[in-house]
Image (tube, rainbow, N blue to C red; front, side, top):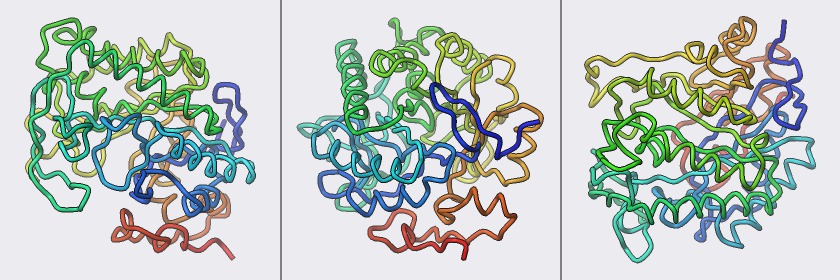
Length: 365
């Protein structure tokens, strides 16, 4: 029976363990939203992961939604990420870039020419957006994307995938989860369209599938992963029948020969709105989708070592990605292997500049 330390084949790669590093936004890019030597050190420290999936990385200026988050669409950003991939490879690791478009989770201050954020429909995310100067204001109403806007965004996905290849990554992951742009097309609680990108499940899934194909055109499907959050309500996204909606997407992606499917389970806060339970909410475990997807299935969201071992042993997942545990424990696989205690994470430094809470967590010994 496989365990966390059984090697695993993902696309063309044989990886040494099944303790993967989940995407973790850290807001430590420079003023040009590029990575630098400190970021390279951070990722190199964690190269013992079976696979590193980077923090969410914008495919274009229109994709930006937060201050300090990196992009991969300019030459400086490509050069910055090349520092990271070289450092990870020097330590024997593998790293995929997670490609991201925030959609309506943004503000005019981030957008080209001060335009409105883009989304499937002209909806408004509740809550406050953090601006580039770190002040907070209400989210604006998004602009409903035209078909030309969608085609331009697919071109942005292809361009970002090409940039990721030049930056030396081993593959890419479509960020199709957590209420960001692909999720805004998929969920009928946000998508109000009546054209070929709205209405039926097949139409609402079209953006997801086209974006995945755009990445595969550059990388080949065997080096492309997709992340989904069927239980997620982050970004105030809802769906009237998530099992049917995500079931269709999972089956469609399963026929594409992807490197992996990355299914998030419910996180703390999912299923609640302003602290109150959402009526009719049902979390959907990764095991629900296992019969629908025969390729490599990764899951994550609050897993312990013991829970991860159970999922792998019974076959509900092939690997488990850890987020907060990897932030605080750069040598997480070795700690798991030895049964060693874990460092305590410092949430106050998750999104702050500098090395504190970033590259200064201690290793064993």
